[in-house]
Length: 413
Image (cartoon, rainbow, N blue to C red; front, top):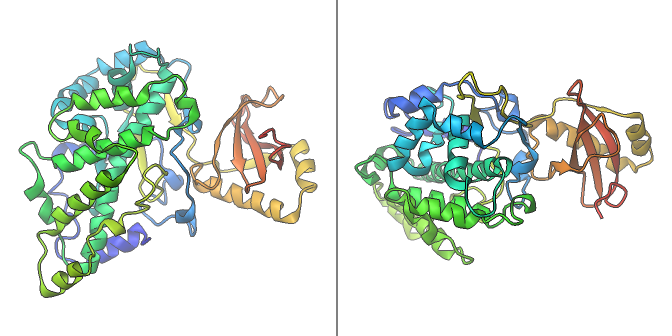
């Protein structure tokens, strides 16, 4: 896959390939410069390519349950208060027309010279979405699980917009002509969005629930609740459920058609010849056959927009782990392991400095070991046979390696 910086460099050579900021709605520009509290890859790499090899890490699903930290002060009354704030009321008003995109939004990398691009998820939007979809519903869903399910849904909806953006950019580089920014106004409805794309983005959110982690599945009717909520949204958005089935053929067909509609504005003898060879853009989608895996090329930004009365750091993320120290017990265990495993541990620490969501690591919450100073323990895969457990001290918040060994030695069965 071509890195975003390379794509942007190519688009700059195409007339109309990059935005000048004027095509962004004023409210998106204003929201796009809000402070963020989660910046993948440490912030400095937000608009740069990931480290070499990062694009190769895959995972079966975005398991947000292990990386989201929710304060004990977060409860349903907290969500109700946020939904009733001025920001919450504005979200509810926008949701009548703009559906899921009222709660979160995507800013294209084509505007990176004007605003920070990526997926924006505001705290108020996340809390309001959780309240609107899951509160008071069958299953008695806790606020903790509702927040995590809401994050999954919003991430996958907005991520679909990024994937379409990226795939069409590949076509533009191939054809040497712009069609994303020039062509989208022709596809928008009277409310300023593309109904077909919003339906498929909601379908992507629903599809992600089919493979949600076990901790967010047992006894939780997540998919029916999200589907019912989507069916009550506006034009296009409400049709997301039509493209969700065990057979992904229709979802793929409609995604291909959506890309094709963008390309209809392009015409030249060379482009016609390329089309005749079957180059329609779908094959250029990033990881097109796995719609559940985390996508490290697109920054995800959590906007701290809650009122000052809200508990600080109510919701936060373990995005990276900069430094990991090692307990004496861990060092002794490590010394007994083969040299290749020792090197893999060093490699795992390097990847954790970039992102806990490198799929190869399968970073996830683990039951605490018998070490009271480490109430929060996480498991990291070194390879198919070896694991490491790391914990965060309750007093200093430092990270430590506390156990390492084989699958069986670390209690994984």
